[in-house]
Image (cartoon, rainbow, N blue to C red; front, side, top):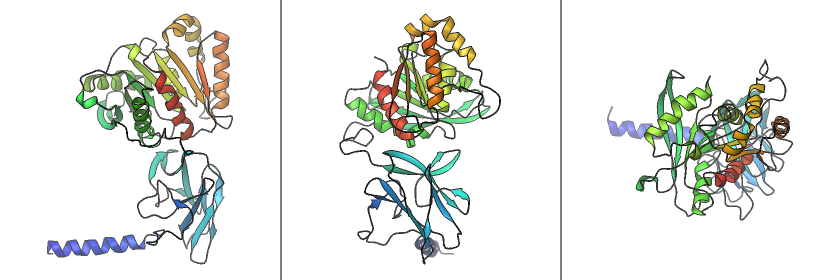
Length: 376
């Protein structure tokens, strides 16, 4: 077949497919309410952001019997005569939120929006704007660093793995070495979480430009491993120190994580005080009761370590920083129980609480507050 004819045929087929996709907007959206969602794929008119931080959804599924939106709360959508299912949410808090379509009982990502790995599957997301004047989590006209994807072979996992590494502005044009923060995602997420949902590079670029945080390397690894401590200490840290210009002493190394990553931070940071001078625990805490996954969590050994070397932890940890959402955060009780044990032992820590649940708006805020405390 003539290549030019084949190209024209392919273009026509693709154009037909695109035109057939449900939810494609009219050329003029001026008559539609609100504005298209920030995370919509190109040309998708819905979901739409309405006044009061509500989201309106419209899904074309004429053969479906029931369509819902799961945004933590489940909303039933209403079908119209054209086979479109519509509905409007309650006001949502600022920042990023996962959501799913539930079509006849099956949860799926919305094809009209960008997808993110969360909740152990590909999920959709909406961004609710921050209040006017709060530009901490938005791109600004400042020098920008970048996030690099690196693959490495892990002896611990016996396979290839990858990490995402934030390098601050000026990294490629300087010869200086930088301190390092190892930053972990939560359960059901992976190494993409902090860069995609968390906006790590935007947060750090803005903080560094304002002189509020020191330039640093941030390493975001995959915490889905059978032995996180070995993966971090024997695989990730040596790889980073070989491939990036980083400082290699404990005073210039920090470890932090959210939810599951917070527990990994506790379980790895406490036994390895010689490796880390800063620990950050976001929306996390050791299980106060037997875990919901079966068995019980062996946390007493860590409390014993803290008890036996209390003075070492209090003097050598430059920051033992704990942050939490409000009481609606599912880790709230575990965290409160853990901090009471710290108080009984006499362990020093800093606690920060911000409104919100077990969600990315809380964790973005946590990074924004924690990063300026590092490497001072």
